[in-house]
Amino acid sequence: MASVRIGSAFGIPIKLGASFLLVVPLLAYIIGVQIELTVELLNDAFAAGIDPEPLADGATPWLLGLAAALGLFASVFFHELGHALAARRYDLETQSITLWFLGGLAQFAEMPEDWHKEFVIAIAGPIVSVAVGVVCYIGFVLLPAEFPAVLFVLGYLAILNVVLAFFNMLPGFPMDGGRVLRALLSRNRSRLEATQTAAAVGKGFALLLGFFGILTFSIFAIAIAFFIYIAASSETQQIFVETAFEGITVTELMTPAVRLDTVSPELPLDRLLERMMRERHTGYPVLDEGELVGIVTLEDLQERADADDTVVADVMSTELATVGPNDEATSALRTIQQENIGRLLVVDDDGSLAGLLSRTDLMKALEIAQQSRSIPAEPQSLER
Image (tube, rainbow, N blue to C red; front, side, top):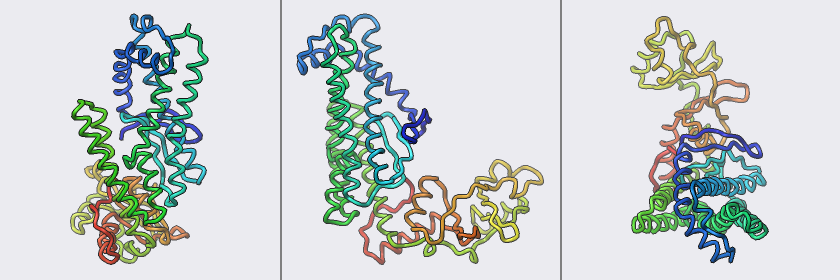
């Protein structure tokens, strides 16, 4: 998801997805054309007595639509921040909060395996949404009738935040309600079984929501249904892989250093390319007199392969993604996925090269683990 960082809150990076810039004007337009209908709803729900005429005059509907749309995304941000702060309580890192087309997404470095922690983190978002809705309602009640525009925005956000909390508590895993369901199921069954059950319920919910979207010509409903279905499948696959690698360390999966093909930093690129083609490798650790100084891949060659007198040292990467030999395989897997890289260098405490762990190593180990442990088959992919 393409995004740009706009700031931070409590040390958590805040990002805007590219789709955010498209959906805000669309939401503003939808809210603007429904001003009178929304005012009627607020008057009926809260006995407010808001006069719709001044709100429907000139550019006012579009300005109110924009204010309400931005207020809605601010509410979504607070919802996701609730998840993030609850996770911090358990020393779990939130890598970012991103606002995008379908709302918001708090990206965690890892999810807790303890069912109680997951329950608290999942329920925190809806609780915050209800709290924001209550605050907006209190402001709506206390504000004099002389400010109909502000009353409209506060009333609109009061209702939408409660709706947001309710919708997120539906069992559409991996939505909040689905995660609450998995947490409760995890009390008396394995995490994989709980995930598979919650995901199955989530997929069923997604199909119903998608069918509703088709009947009502709702692009938003169809998009949310598609996201839920794909995310439920991805989450199940991820837990399956983590279960398969449970108790396995990097040492058991890596290619040891003694079996690795390495290159010198002084090797010319044309000879490196020939070697890659001959040995069918796309990456090599770079050693200088036995010391690890970098890694060079086929991608590094693409921009400089035609340059004369260019050697490996000119193109190699010196910012190395590494892992320890005694680290858990699941930790290495998460690093590969998060960094979107094909391999990790395995480095001892003294900085010496101990081996290399690739996606291919993980895939082979996954097949063996599935057969030896009789783990139910799932689509086997380490992409995420």
